[in-house]
Amino acid sequence: MMSEVQVHTVARQMLEQHGPAAIAKAAEQAQACEGRGEADEAREWRHIVDAMKIMRGPHQG
Image (cartoon, rainbow, N blue to C red; front, side, top):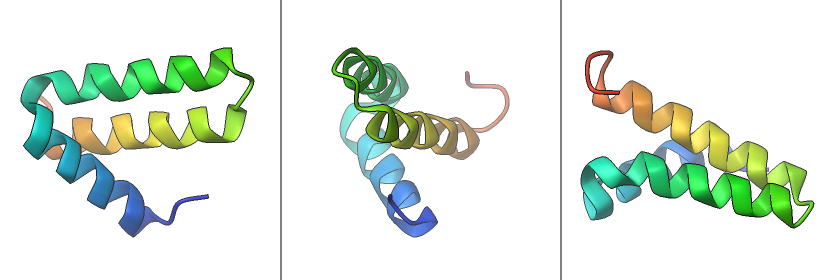
């Protein structure tokens, strides 16, 4: 399981690399993990999604 620091590091890197599409990409990763039965990994991707939403602020999605 990723630490909070790792989650926020990945979230920040994804936002820098993918811009507004980063949240959708992370959500797709979560769905793909769920489809493969990887519940823990899916939970981590959803945590990353939540972190990106916080970083972007309340009015940006």
